[in-house]
Image 1 (cartoon, rainbow, N blue to C red):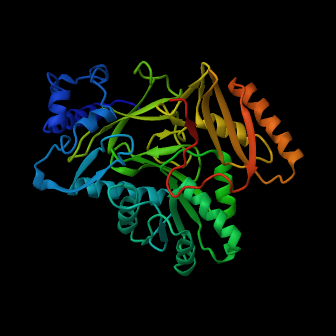
Image 2: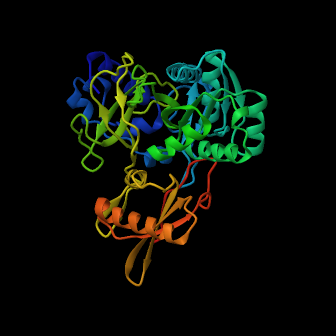
Image 3: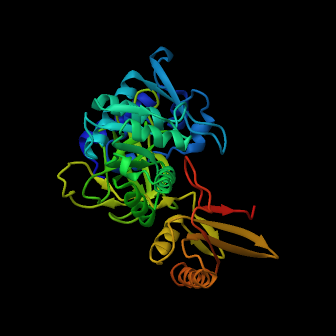
Amino acid sequence: MEMTEQILTKIRESVRRAKEGAFYRGHFAGIEPEDIRSLADFERLPFTEKEDLRRAYPMGLRAVDEDEIVRIHSSSGTTGTPVIIPYTSKDVHDWAVMFKRCYETAGAGKSDRIHITPGYGLWTAGIGFQAGAELLGAMAIPMGPGNTDKQISMMIDMKSTVLCATSSYALLLAEKITQRGVLDRICLRRGIIGSERWGEKMRRRIASELGVRLYDIYGLTEIYGPGIGISCDRECGMHMWTDYFHYEIIDPRSGLPVPLGEVGEIVITTLEKEGAPLVRYRTHDLTRDLPGDCPCGRPYPRIDSLIGRSDDMVKVKGTMIYPSRADELLAQVDGVSSEYQIMIDHLNGKDIVTLFFETATPDEGGRGNLERVVKDSFKEKIGLTITAKAVGMGDLPRSEKKSTRIFDNRY
């Protein structure tokens, strides 16, 4: 993303605000906002890592007086100490403005009924979808996760027109609606899907079974939450609301910028955030900048759909496995579903990789052929010999939140 003098001015102000908090006073010790006079100066600033934010628990990121904090949100904390993000009234409003912009980009308006399935509480998702819908003037239907039977009943009775969900839960809803034979009673026209990366085959299944147009939404708890970017009707990347933050794409190993159009890790610096400004925060999400202007005419830059996370890469026998590469591989095999799991075990001194995939093919001979095709394709395209196992449709677990694709059982 281009660095203008206006952005530099905003970055200096963000650094000034951040240093009002205990964490950045230490993290940026010896660094003053006035030291940042160029892109090179900015790129010399140290990165902020998630572990840094965990060490700031509970309120070390707070950069304003405590009585200015109106809300907190938190990461799940499933892999360690949770991260607490405090919000001021302005932060809450700015987030809603960005989310309203997401809905408008997806073609939603005041007449829509927005069915919200992501979770509420400390997680940012549900309340972000709701605040944006209310600012839009649409009807919010705040279901939260779970109770799929009730979800479908409310979807029918309330004539929901927009579904907000993770891709995993959108797929589960699509499958259950198809099984119940009630698609003709569903009024959905759009699906706004986020929280995890998803492949093209999964996208086609959800769109086809629900009869909706799908939009990728981007965000993370540390940077407001979902709603900081979304795809448009042209389906050529996600527009990023860069009046609220600056982003970089870096090589996850060297930390240096990648050439335009190459895949790297997205790093974000907030420009407007008050409660917990973040400077050069490593998201570990892998994507690439898309050059040029979008045909839709929006002035905001675009990143490509996420291909995974730099901390989700798994190395087996010297070969890196990304979920996105498995998605792409399976998308090219006829008769194979979008759902899969990769199990990595260490047996008798060797790493063993087993890829389970779903198929509607009922006979053993057909499944055996598919297993051979998948195994050979994995070897050819990824460079690793695996065991491929076909299972029936619906045999792999579904999730109301994010689906785990790779299970590394070696450690």
